[in-house]
Image (cartoon, rainbow, N blue to C red; front, side):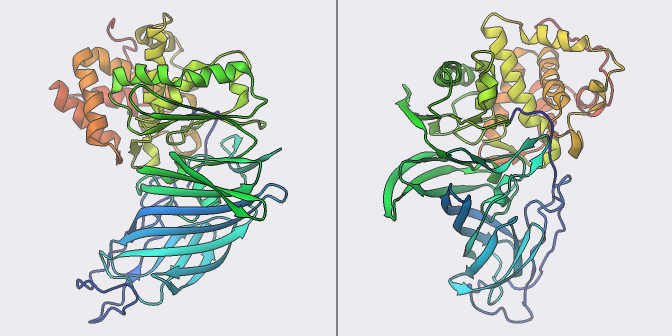
Length: 477
């Protein structure tokens, strides 16, 4: 993502139920003292204590939304397929603001309670450990668009529809979820809108079906695991541009008709950017590609899986291909390999910024080493050096040093271990953690394994120390 400031949420209270081992079908009451225990109300994130939940892993979301632009009302039904990781007497979902009208678990009515973002669901009887179960939540209301990290996120009304996106916790504003990257799942997203509007989401467009009453349902499938915050919905009067790359990746771009030529030309360079990134990072991790440029005030670019969203203001000064490079690099770093904790945000933003640096060198501008040298000219007493990339704090989650010091660390690592080892580290990282999550410690361990060097002191100085590294400029690569 590229935006100005930042946001907050999540901590885990691990609840272990050493109870029943027999496979009890959903709906059956656990016996022999196995009455179950509540799933925790946080997944264990160090920054956001209530993000995500414990006691289950989501396998699949089917999010069905009917949206009325005239009133901004959203009517939703979300079906969650999950596997219990303990005997569950009750469990939480994340949902903010919208009114729940019914919940079933395993086809049976469930009761529920609300406290803040926590929706606590009580099934008719405990769910056995290891059992796959289905939760259907019906809800409605006008979704919120809070100001967070200096920008609007959530459901942002536009003059012809709505834009639903954000980071880190947007999912809870429009569908119930286990809202943390640690619990990735596949998605079906069905968006029902008035005829004449288009509804864009992640992955592949499976079809458009009239549903009566002047409405059309647009159905999208994302068959690769996706973090909840990367799911998005954009509704409006778009022009859709479709193509297929030489190796079969389907491209669908969506432009508000009022979007300028520079924005279009930048997004349309997506395949060229893709080929460049594949040359550095390996094969593109998904089957679909695209971009969305809507018209709304403010905003930020976000790397929604397979289809980033770009604000029109990003192209006011002309084409902005480096921004496209940044958001498409996130498809590898952040989307395929996701952070296990929000404190590891540099693994997303540092790599995406470094991709911009690689593009700069490839296109005849400053090389990554030249950019490292330029940033090293910032005096040591400046606040830039006080933010530590591997633990920036909630308030600095999307601060400039997270992006830039992250990229500086990668260039310094490259010059320390050499080109061959550096790109082997990157490709191995992506292969080992594809469709999963990872941590800074895992990246450090891999770097030491591949290079054969002891690098704890290096990473401590570049990632963990508040202050300017000395020396700041390393090597001549």
